[in-house]
Amino acid sequence: METAAAPRPEDNLPELGVAELSRAVKRAVERAFDRVRVRGEIGRVTVAGSGHMYLSMKEENAVLDCVCWRDTARRLAHRPEQGLEMVATGRLTTYPGRSSYQLVIESIEPAGVGALMALLERRRKQLAAEGLFAEERKKPLPFLPSVIGVVTSPTGAAIRDIMHRLRDRFPRHVLLWPVAVQGEGAAEQIAAAIRGFNGLEPGGPTPRPDLIIVARGGGGVEDLWAFNEEAVARAAAASGIPLISAVGHETDTTLIDFASDRRAPTPTAAAEMAVPVRAELEARVLDAEGRLVGGAGRMLERLRGELRGLARGLPHPVRLVEQKSQDLDNAAGSLRRVMTLALAERRGAVRDMAHRLRHPRETVAEKRAALARAAAGLRPAALDDRIARSRDRIARGARDLARAAGTRLDERGRGLAQLGKLLESLSYRGVLERGYAVVRGAGAPVVRAAGVAPGAALAIEFADGEVRATASGTPAGPGPAAPKPRPAAAGGQGDLF
Image (cartoon, rainbow, N blue to C red; front, side, top):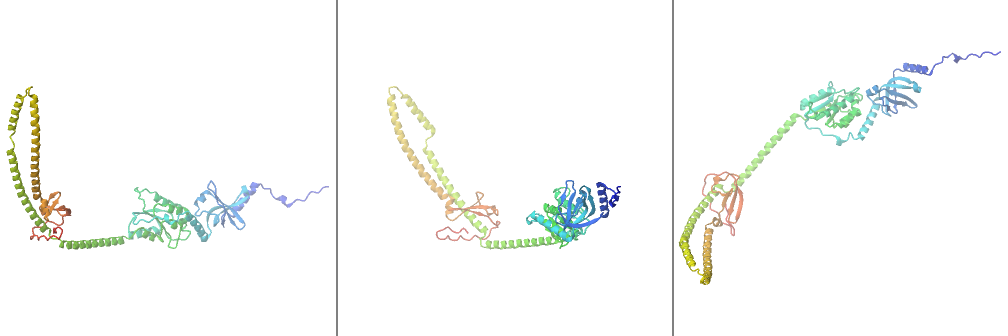
């Protein structure tokens, strides 16, 4: 007879399905670890097309898979980077599809100040390698900007310090772009403000700033971290408007300080860099004005002294003009007398020549009589004889005419030569040969000093050529008698003065 087998203890355990067991494990894990903080080194980080972020955290031989949903990933203040030690806060759950557990990240941050500084140094080297901090990219600040754009919190002390310093130094038109300077979304707002100022059109309803100041008061590394974000540094480096960074106190350094065109240790110092002191500019202008007026006065006084010295070395122009006017009057009187005599002589010669000439009527009557005689002698029998006699008379007349013409031309030539000599003796050029000169202005002779304006161009003709001169001074009244001309140097012309 067979005996029944003894029951085993495990036969009393209930049977569970795989899905049921997975759900039970999930509930147990989530109930025990619904809020945890995990510290570890970030492994490979992957962002799916849906926007969800998958990464791993590791420490020695342990690895924890992590997931960060899309909405949470967009709000993260610090993006996970491979190799960086960080602290993640979230809840532990399981993934039944792979029988694994994972951490659902709700926030993540570097593990302490050291980790932040390591992240900052890594980011700084990356941006520096791209050339964003190069000195040749930096733009000079305008000397006196008309409009200053300020990117900062509207309720912070930075904007009050900037406005107070600008009022003290040189009041300017200030445009405030209010942003959050720390916390979630601060970096995006700061970068958008810098791009927004650069996007303003010149001459538009909102004036485009000539200078941008990005400012914030002091704080810890975490408080200033928005200014270390890559988006802010890239926006500052790409700004077409000169930019001053004034973040924190003098010892604080952020990435925007390297990307900006000028770093100010404090917001107050940024305002001092932005504008000069108006009182100092006014003092410099007044000083330059005084120096300019003084220099001009000294130059004029020096020129006056030189002019007085030159004037002492010149004879009085009125005396020179008076003497030359008298010489010109004498020459004009002599010329009139000589011309009168010459004209009377020429009239007498013309009358003598008129007496020697026959009247045209007598010549015409004589020719008519000759023509009548010739007509009467034109007979066929005597025509040849008449032609021969006519040819003889023409030949004799031609010889007589040639002799008479030569004689008359010789007489006319001698008369013309005599007239030329007389005209040469009466010409003013003979007067010039005796040491005088003719002064002309605008092509006409100048006979009075009153007809010469100061600065007028004059032409002075001497016997051997002409020189140009410019009238100086004003005409004066008659003075004492002109001095006698000095004797000419040996072998040359006498001195005009």
